[in-house]
Length: 288
Image 1 (cartoon, rainbow, N blue to C red):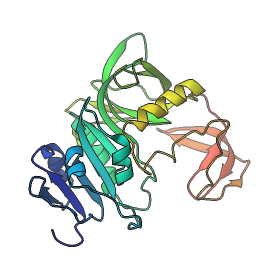
Image 2 (cartoon, rainbow, N blue to C red):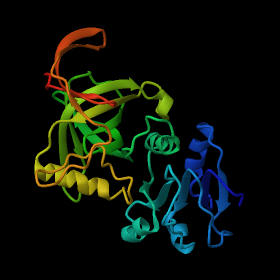
Image 3 (cartoon, helix red, strand yellow):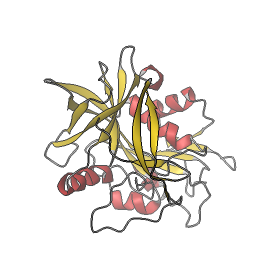
């Protein structure tokens, strides 16, 4: 294998769908047949994709001192398989993808793993690609859960939802530890899904969760922990519990108690700012 490979895929054909998405994204990657690979395997600079079984057979282990920015390691395993999660985490893998996974969710995960710009998330949302249900009115509908974080999610829906509308997303028992988990929030973004492997007419719906009670927050954290293995855990989106210390902020906030005009979809309204930093501002809650 050449030195300095940016993206490495280790498989024997089982990761064809992931490779097809990498090609669509224009990514330059190297594919190493798992059956002929020998340990040690040189680590890629940006992204590593491997089946969980191959990762174990090759005794893959991330170096204690890595590159900056840190490469993303993703392992793939069959849904329901007995996967040694602690071993994968200790080896340095960041995410576990349970197959089969919807191509929209997989594309989102790979796109964010490849991005190295200044606005890259410190902790990407976790890709799921599994069926869930949601309710925005009187009827409950089925959608695909594209990704999930402690503060929100994105859905792939057959019909668009109304922005700012209240929504209840229900994770099935198979994803939520044996019992349905309902997450309340509101719709913050609606867009066409065609550019993210969706079909014509499908829509991606962004959801921001309302404040979660401690029990719901704990269950949601357990759902995420099934997919996130290493330091890529969504600390940037996490909502610490009352007894948990908040991590130090990367950007200093300054008090800025001023009224401002906000624009959204052509509508203007007044908001009360509370504080501001280089990355954003905090405002008083606004209905909807």
